[in-house]
Length: 113
Length: 110
Image (cartoon, chains in turn green, purple):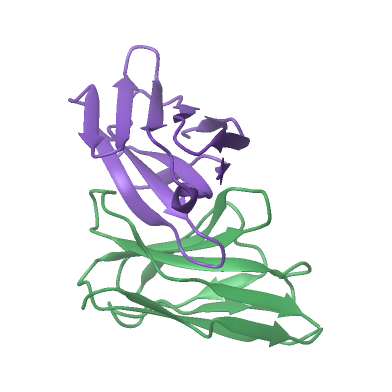
């Protein structure tokens, strides 16, 4: 079955730690995206990548970093510079240049302890 | 950039009644309008979509209407059931990026 796999489902971070959220897709989609979702709010774009080895900042990129070394993978690192990282993180992919047919992963819930 | 507004933020209906959620967008270049359903703790799932060359699309109990002139589109759910309870997001796309509404929490009361 084609789809997007996010891991882990739950993640706990200590103050001052960097953590990396995994996102893997086998849909052969060119574009991949990271969104942050806070309670009662919509989806806010963190970073997106339309091709391998290239990515762009979204609306709330500060405190986050990404890489796109492989078409299938788009990991997100939440750095210690992100002061309020507790949220639900969603990865998505779509066919590049068309902006159609977003497919979402099942999300990672990150909590600072 | 595009600005998508969604109303209402919360909606409660009795089982069997209809539910309507409305969205407006600002960029006339937007040409694709999907709706997503998100259940608690899960990622959003596409439930229906419409392109700008179509005014209405229906899939069983779900329908979407689009008014390009007024730049608004709506989701209609008929004969609601408890399993329809979820958060619904609208989105607008110009072809390169999605812009999401802030979501509507729908509760269907048995």
